[in-house]
Length: 312
Ligand SMILES: C[S@@+](CC[C@H](N)C(=O)[O-])C[C@H]1O[C@@H](n2cnc3c(N)ncnc32)[C@H](O)[C@@H]1O
Image (cartoon, rainbow, N blue to C red; front, side, top):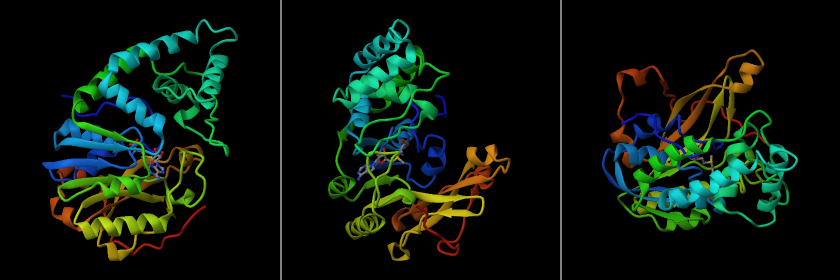
């Protein structure tokens, strides 16, 4: 079995590359993984591939995203046929493939938010980065050099994801606080909210932002219920730190995961490394595994020692 977990389509903030590091803080057997901010569910897919859990609850407030996941997992052939027809349509569209993308985007914004339309927009949009306007419309332009994921590549990935999660997954599209109410002891909750730099405000990268105070309160409630969790929450690039630490009273251990070189800094000729913060609840701290090769990619910082500053 390949060690790289499959993924359906690119998604900003995806934890696909970091998932192997995040999984080192999970037990190797537990009841259910709950992902309230699932995006394209990279961590659920990685956990299913490792067979650490046999049941999954995935949720995102962005309903069309969850519908892509649901259909990929439960009716992959139907989704793939719809996507292929749409993808091929760009080559015969009057006005060309860029006009085709704009047409699909207009249909989507007018309410035709089908899984294949959302998937095509994600696969074809510039820099793989979704952008939402003030009115909530999807407003990212098309990538002018690529045509979006080839249906054959997509088919391999969608079938791989389906075989990992079929029959084991519950799907929701609710605010994360509703999902946290459904959690219980024995679950592991993995949370990857939007970065704090854009919290409390409209977030153009996602359909919604998340308030720091409300989020901290929700984490406190998980602690009171004795539910274990892992949270990805901001980080640092070079000397610049992003976001405020979660309150120390939550009793989490904070580690910094090396996420690679920041593409922006490479463009500026600086080659700065980006680190992402990971908070681990008390009940999971004894499960931490370190492999020889991991010692070189982890830089642990003691929680709260670094000066932090909020951006945005
Ligand atoms: C950083 S992304 C998650 C990426 C994901 N870990 C992955 O690997 O693809 C954050 C996600 O949180 C979702 N989100 C934002 N506000 C939310 C809320 N209040 N409740 C649930 N999901 C929310 C966004 O739609 C976005 O998909």
